[in-house]
Length: 276
Image 1 (tube, rainbow, N blue to C red):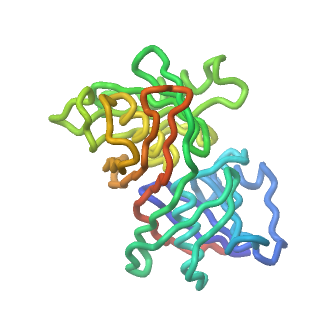
Image 2: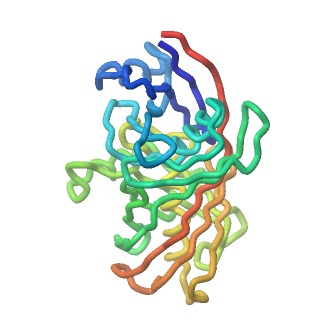
Image 3: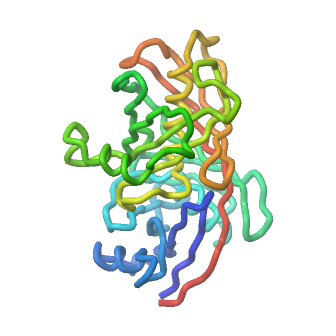
């Protein structure tokens, strides 16, 4: 059996071509393959499968074998994998619905992929400095003075297991403005670090979390915005730069706000072919 390893902004994945339908991994097998000491090592595992209505289907599993959610960086990586298989069009289905993508730049092993995420509806403010929202999976976004000074693993794990997020739990993103800027202003450049459930550790990047962080940053600094006009955030993850674009509506209301035309853009790179 062949697996292919890709990474998107340091978020790494094992991907298998399952268009024949003959590949199945148990939860224990996924956990073992993703283990960085006793397996290949990855933040998650994906299967590219046939779809009746779209170009392909993305099936995603966390490193602990849990599934049923969307992964933004995984989505960009599986598009890069599909391109390497010969696909020229990228409409696909995932756990949270339909997605489409474009390859903005293609340097062979490394591509820049622009992925359309799901529309986002509503958010909840917690304690004034944290926002809870769903961008394909659940995220708690907390604003801090400087992400470099955060105990991402310790505090992220504590929040991830709080009773109010049980039984599913939540990913936790820590966000600060770029140095020299102020989050109380309408900044468009942020830094993000993420504790990711299912991996149970800090990951170098999280696509749905970066989208959640950008949208929460807009809400946090919202002082009125021209209706139906696009917003772009440049987001610095652990090592790489990504971008999030969206169109906000009714942003002054937590329950009724809407964010449409949400796009995540960033790198996706082929790393290796693995023979099991």
